Structures are given as structure tokens and as C-alpha cells.
Image (cartoon, rainbow, N blue to C red):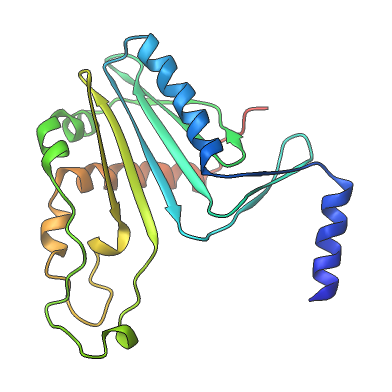
Length: 209
């Protein structure tokens, strides 16, 4: 273990090293949102993904190293470029990625068309159908989260939820799972996850230099 720590310290000492927190990520995203607002864009939003305490380290294009100072945050900003084109840009603790153009499909348009459903639908917390006297010994609460910020038709609103609240992965069935997974927000989230996972798995997100 000491040898590993020594090698890591040596590596940090011989290369550039950056360590950024959530405030840094938020500042990058705020700049992007300000740019879209100046353009009077009527359709843009973000999804922020994070798991409490998860740390990531990256080799940067210039050869330096970068890591999250505590929790790693990945933010995906989506905006309408035209009636047929949607753009997505990723931001994280280590900077920004190049924007990607994708088709503004009918499925995606439909998912965000019902603004009221997105605004008013609330993800309910995980609730077991039975209370266990030894609940702490039988229930593991996941700490992964998703947070949204929307600007649709000039209306701004935010939503957030724990991924755990959508599941039935604890000892007792989650009585709120069916309600949660029927929400328009979660249907949109599933589309975004499919898209993001495809880009991540195929190395489509490329860091800006």
C-alpha cells in the first residue's frame, strides 16, 4: 500500500495536476446556460449525475492529471439547435467536452412537450411495503442522484431524485416504484440514459483542449 501511495505521489509530482469540486462544474454549466439565454433559446436543460463520494481521475489531453476533489459530477446540457437538430455537451470536474449534434427525434420532442407533467410530477421516496424492525440491517440505501434544470418556453424549473427510489432492490417491495417510473420525468430520463450510455460506451465524448 505504501508503495502504491509513493508511486501515486511521484506521478503527481512529475505531471500537472488539477482537482476540482462541484462549484467548478456549476460555473462551467452556468456559462453555457448564460450563452443559451443570450441567444434567446427557448428549449434547453441539463441533467447532473453523481454518486456521493465517488472519485474519478483522468488523463487530460495535455498530459496532466485531473480528479474530482470529492464527488465526481457529470453534467449533460441539451439544447435545441434547430427544428431537426438537438445538441448535447458534457461537463465534469475536469472541464468541458465538445458538443455533439443529434437528431431531434419525435420521441424526444414528445418527452419534453408536456411541460406541466415534467414540472408537477414528483418522485416519491423509497417506501417498503412492510416495516422491518431491523431495517438498518436489511436495507442498503444507494447514494446516486440525478438533478435536472429546465428552461422550456421561458419557464425555469428544477427536479431531482435518487436512483434508488425507482427500484425494488431492497428487502421489501417499494410501493412507490410504479408511480415513480410512470412519471414523464423518468420517461425522459430513460431516453437520456440510453443516449448518454451509447456515447460513453463508444467514446463519443471528446474533451475540449
